Length: 123
Image (tube, helix red, strand yellow):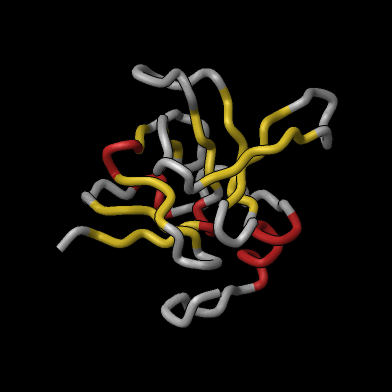
């Protein structure tokens, strides 16, 4: 964690470092409408911008694209189906899962846990 990132609470640690999931509709970031950027709560790495965010109806903050090089993926075999998990390329913190049911122009949906994000509004 860098010096500008506040300490994480237990729920954030569970998601970031033990691949947990917050309940759907629990994050205030679902309703965030301001312009700005979304950073990893664990290290401050910039992951998404508000221009990449959309309302997927899933109950989690969703994005159709990510900042280049900010995320890495791996296959997740925890459920009966194989999913693609993504995590912060800088600190390795788990953020969510990537699906191929998003809007144009990418067709992707980064389904992110709100607790793992820090929103910074544009000034």
